[in-house]
Image (cartoon, rainbow, N blue to C red; front, side, top):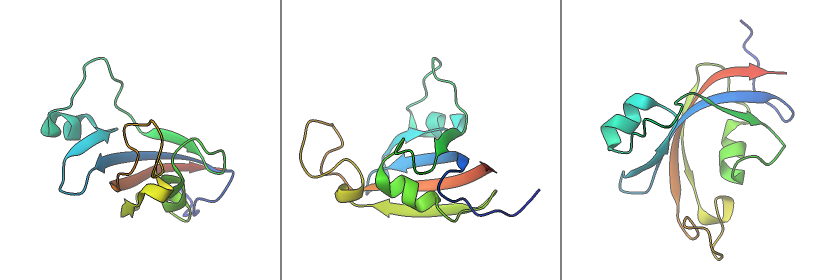
Length: 109
């Protein structure tokens, strides 16, 4: 297994836990974390999120955090509204600072 660092164009598989400042979990790709946070849904398939870097599939701060990460690397990031859902608009997460714990499970070139 190579120690390649994720770069634009790569597809990264990542487990994540998303929290608001203060610790309330709003989303996660891990079943155990969802159960612990009281947000488990039996209808959901809990597995790593696949993100093609550079394709703008996720919020800017999330994508930027993944750049340079390697397989099995964990990172905690705080994403300000400007790099999340913005300061204005209709999205329920507008104006919110988000915290994520990321764990990269694979990087594909």
